[in-house]
Length: 368
Figure 1 (cartoon, rainbow, N blue to C red):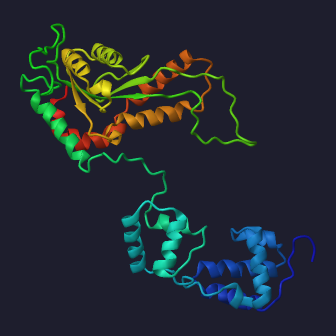
Figure 2 (cartoon, rainbow, N blue to C red):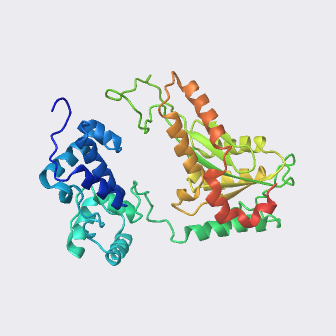
Figure 3 (cartoon, one colour):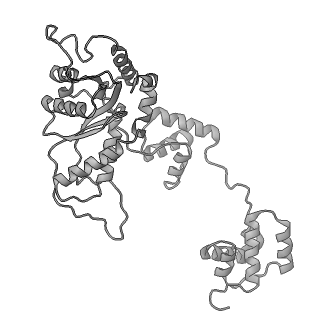
C-alpha cells in the first residue's frame, strides 16, 4: 500500500458487506459498512471517510477497530450507551437542592453530588449537566440588605398613587414633615394639561477607558488609548413617551439636580411629568421636591435598595458596552459620543418592557 491507503483485514467478503448494507436501516451502521467497502475497493482512508461525511481521524479509528475485531467492534450496540448517573427523579431532587441553596460554585455542586447522590461528573461535563437542568451561569447581582421583600408591590402602589393623585389638589412631592405654611405652586408658565409623560432618571459615571467587551485578536489583545478622564457625572432621563435627555453636570448637589429637571421640562413642555428615580439625598430633599413641583414634575421614588426596578440601569449598561471599545481624543468628543449612543438607545422601549407590563399597564390610557 502507498500514500494514505490503509491495509484492511477482510473479515467479510464484499457480498457479505453488500447484504448487510441492504438489511440495515441504522444510519450509523450503514456509514461504517460503506466506509469499509470503499477501503475494500482500494480507496484511501481519507477518501473513504470523506465519502461518508466523516473526518480523516475518524476514518483511521474505524479502520483500526475493524482490523482489531471486525463488524462486532466497528458497530457496537447503539442502544443509547451507558445509563445516566442521575435518573429523572434524582435530577429533580438535585434541582430542588440547587434552588434552595443558590448561588453555587461548580466545586460546591460537585461536592453536593458526591455527598447526596454518591456520583461524580467530569469537570468538563458538569457545565453541560447544569445547562440541561436549566441553570444560568452569571455574576450574581448585588442586593442591598435593606431592600424590602415586597419592593415590586411598593413601587406598584407608588405608581398607582401618582396617577390617582393627579385628580387632587395636594402637591404630590410634599411630605407631612415639610413646612406646612410654605406654599407649593406650579409656575404660571408651566402647562400640565396635555397628558402625562413618564420617564426614569439616574446618574452614572461612564469613562472612555472602561473596557468590558471581548474582542477578537490574533496576538495578545491590547488597545492604546489617550489618557482621557471624565470628571463630571452623566445625568440621564429615559422617557417612555417623551424626549429623553442626557446632561453632564459638575456634581450631584441639589441645585444641579434641579437644573436637570428644568432641562427635562424644557424638552417635554405641556404635559405632567412622572419621574421615577432613586433615593439619593439630593433627590429626596425638600428643596428638590419643591422645585420639581414648581416645574410640574411629580417624583416617584423607588423602594430603598432597588435599582433593578429602574429601567435606565440597563440603558447605562448598554451605553458603556457600546462605547467601551471606541477610542476618543478628549472629554468633549466622548461626551458627544455618549449623547449619540444614549439618544439611539432611549428610542427603544425594550429596556422598560417588563416595567410597563408590571407597573404601567393599567394607566396606559392616561398617557398622552
